[in-house]
Length: 246
Image (cartoon, rainbow, N blue to C red; front, side, top):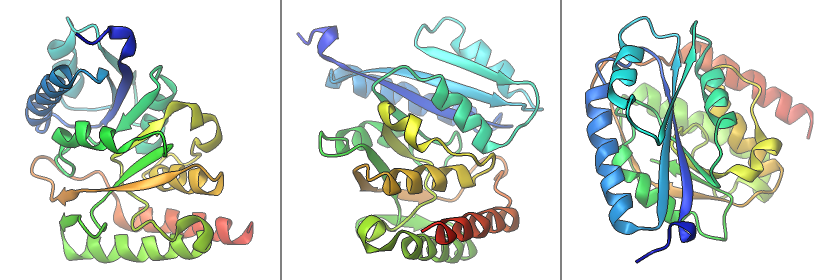
């Protein structure tokens, strides 16, 4: 029998904004993840939900579902502050050695959490999921594919061969981090740019990064919160700062 002290503690950070339609699927998958983790006996898993000023029943459903769960925290923003702010709130609330971030929607499969955790060997400080990995796959609109690939190429140019040659995507929200690196890589962006900032900061600080091949799906429930044009502008401004300081 595995001693509890021998297990690795993991916090899973999940920002939520108006996810009422998605939560039933999310809950089902997280329950399956807990079952897998319990059988595997490698990890102790905790969940941190950030309700970022939802105007639907997201908070009510979360509180009703997890009121009796000791391994769940629900953090609340009274007003919608943006994905980056919600993500930082969650990251700063973590206490475990390893931290998983993943969206509440159906773009990434939460059932892959145990698999991406197994990619976090002693050789790495950050594992980022990538649909553009040679073994990955994407299933979302063509305009998003073109945008993601273009942004990735620009970030690779900004980082240069030394830091970014092995990476194929920079905007994935599905990752595993060693919590000890947060002081060096915490983003400043309040929007979806925050995920790219986290990864670039990690690369520039020479933390060890690898990619986990995954499949990205088109959202099945609710509406995407990503504002494409605004997000592209944020990336371009950040890229300009990166280029100008190197």
